[in-house]
Image 1 (cartoon, rainbow, N blue to C red):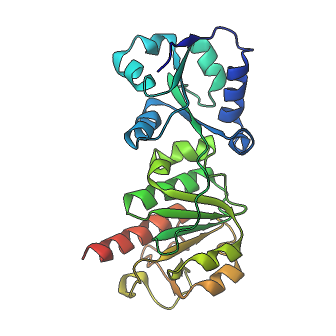
Image 2: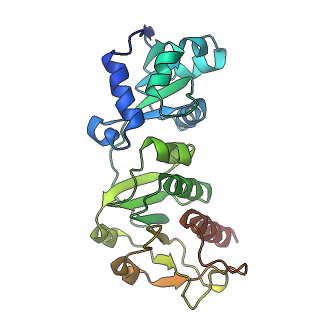
Image 3: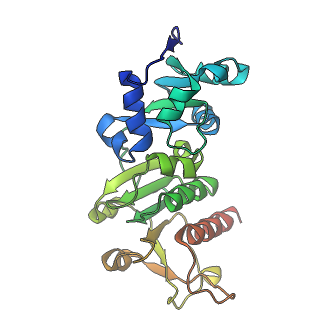
Length: 258
């Protein structure tokens, strides 16, 4: 870590750049960097050994031994007044530390890896929650088709709670790119004849999850070798897509451990 830089002006070019990264969900694509806010996400990033280009920390937090040590993971550190940090943050209650991550290069699709395919999901909370479930249940790859909420946007990062750093993330894909996958595609449908609990699940596989209102597109559904129904004895019409993903990914994980 180099000597910390103290910043006291809200017009500082570094702070202006960070403000765009924190408050514009698509800015990371233009600027090539990602803003990671809060000690939980920063700790998760450090635990995975991911390089940090810069830490930004408040003057008060710099006096905290554990947060100061966390900031020391970064190649560079900027110390700012709490008011300036709040001006960067898009959170109702701003954190006291954030990391700047160079946007990872988009990896190629790994053909044989257990995967999740996201088809035009719009809600960042849903997308982040699905990433958490994928990481928790050992599904190593998430493939986001064009039209899906930006995977590295601040809202998806917050909802993902560190799952990003455990996954192979590929976004902006056209549907035809899925031809590279060499694992079966599975989808859920409330109208499917076969129920999930009794189905013979292929392992590994790729679970396909669709738009919150429209579901999986007809063309993508036609690529799925198996459609399954999640039983809902309570009588609800359908599950939230993030809840459905958790059920499916847990079931794949459970079967794989037997």
